[in-house]
Amino acid sequence: MIGQPLHTTFLSSLPLSRFEIDRDHEFRSTPQLFDTLWADEATRVAVFWNGLALLGDGTAGHPELAFMPAASIAAVGGAGVAGSAGVEVAVYLGRSLATDVTEPVGTRLVALSLSDDAARALEPDESRWVNLRTVASGLTDRDAGAFTEALGIINWHNSHTHCPRCGAGTVPEMGGWVRRCPVQDIEIFPRTDPAVIVGIVDEHDRILLGSNALWEINRYSLLAGFVEPGESLEAAAIREVFEESGVRILTPEYLGSQPWPFPASLMCGFLARVDPASSTDPLVPDGEEILDVRWFSREDLADPAQTAILPGSSSIARAIIEHWYGGPIPGRDW
Image 1: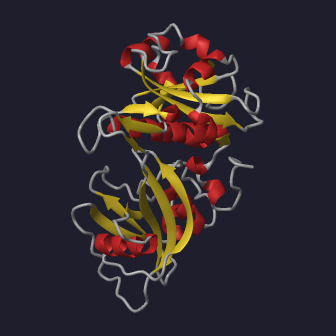
Image 2: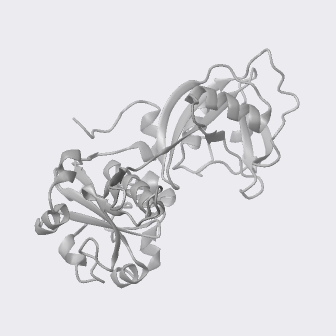
Image 3: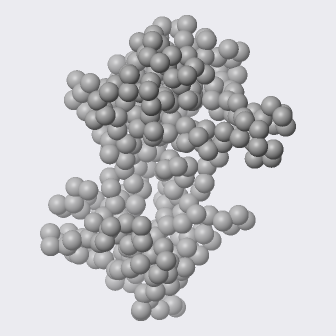
């Protein structure tokens, strides 16, 4: 069935790759779509503000998105009506397929991105507005997928308010999945930027981690970078690793992918071995993006005295490291 989650050893470890929503593409073209959705008492709405989502009241015992009847937020700054002053973006997410949530299977779900005033009027307690990175692992498959989908498409709307050809303001259509330029009469579709992230293993079965110039001191993760035009994923992995560390790798083995809507990436994960014909001594960080690169053994990462800060639980980097390690790393509840 469309929208059923993927259950494989590696993919099931990727929090943001989970989904239990049928995106219901055909329904997006319904005339006066949002009027139809608001008229349906079964429709449920999740609200977002500045990249944060409103969580439920906590009675479920785990984090959950606050999916509400449209009528319950209609009076808050006009937030119940797409295109009103209180709503910056409205997106039809699709139909819920989950059996472990309150809403029945088939419930139609909408995401609303609210203005500052509407968000504060709806919920002034800012502790209930949360970042996807902090709650992803605790969400259900349906809610993790809904949060990731909504954040990605809202970010796209925020960066495509004007036509790239003529600069005219664009208008959303198709349930929030297309923007149209009224001057050029062209449709502008959402985009995703592919990036590669690579677990690199040497002849001693150690993994290579690098420290980015934008991070705090002693934070390490896998090497990663964007795919360039006319480049395959594998070629990008080989190029990025060499540019950032001076290490040459053999043909990377694809593991799986995870959306990373910060703002619009798709992280394509690989595992690769160092080319035995090349030297890895010394390691050569590029000095601009990557300030340090180090080899870590399993013993290094399991050592309680190890002070390196490792990737968070919502990232594909953590999943790849644990895939190499063979499971969760003791004492590393990141």
